[in-house]
Length: 272
Image (cartoon, rainbow, N blue to C red; front, side):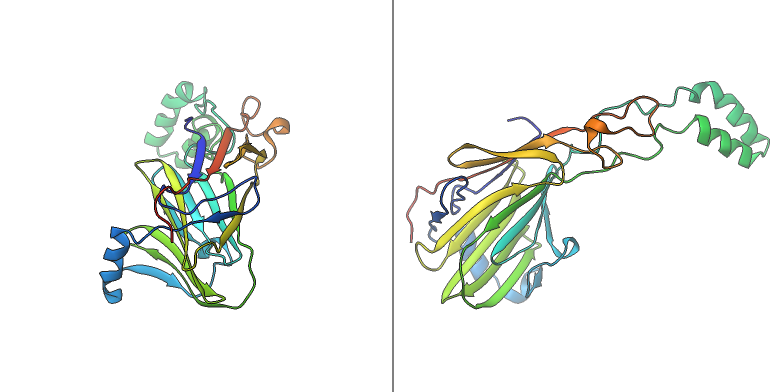
């Protein structure tokens, strides 16, 4: 898999995510050893950030990451929003920042410094020695994965939390007498972000998944279980790379290409 391919998948023990098909019916697994351990852990001893309503803005979402991939989890009820990041997606693309005038002016900069000509030395540094451009290119988001869950009825017992011991973000609530649980974590070993869905009643889980992005790009469905997003990032100024120019000594670097995918991972074990 290419480094830029951003794979968001459900775990082998997770409920299925269906894309490009009618909303999938997801199955749930029997209680795992980790779930049993969590259940035995006194609530007072757990370290967690928790809230009784979904995030309404980015700063309220719960952050997860594995060093390369990252996501902000909003914990919505009818629609879950995961804002996605990958550590090589920056505004613009590869370029040479070194100022070619720097070496030729180094001695004069030193002379002015030792002579106490501070303002004059700084002016010369600013005009001949700083990188080109002076500011670093800005980090960019890949886009959003939106999971939409059909359903009506009053919601109760809502809670979203980030467990600081396990680095798992969870959203739980009850609707029409059914308990729902959604868990998200970032795996370093498998280099994926995982979404696991469970419910207290068989056959009630149904959803659709879709990508969108502020970057230039397009969505597709390469196969029956996969949704994809790919395109080109933006320039430093935020304009489409194809038509932009910037404060470079040569044409602004083109935006970096990116790709994201979400795939359903079928559960083959017992269901309930």
